[in-house]
Image 1 (cartoon, rainbow, N blue to C red):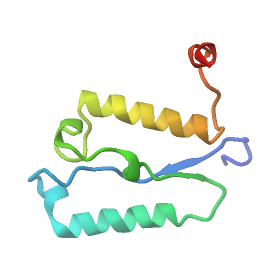
Image 2 (cartoon, one colour; image 1 turned 60 degrees about the horizontal axis):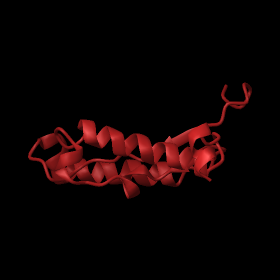
Image 3 (cartoon, helix red, strand yellow; image 1 turned 90 degrees about the vertical axis):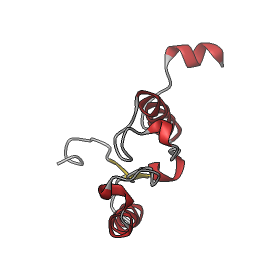
Image 4 (spheres, helix red, strand yellow; image 1 turned 45 degrees about the vertical axis):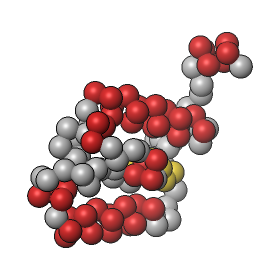
Length: 102
């Protein structure tokens, strides 16, 4: 459907912080499942762009509320990283403000 509508697809790995006690994140089995999920995403061979978000998103507790939901500061970092990826991959243009500073 995306290809038929000339929509570029981006798949991203799942970032989380292992520094929380929530069983959804802390247990070894769930961390293994998240690693497996991220490996599947990184191994996708279709026409999608692959953003290894988990590799660049900091894991510090200050960026997460519970290990997998982002805090306000985590959302700022997430937005910047995603924006940088999309611009760097040529999927969107830079903003007018960025163009003025170049």
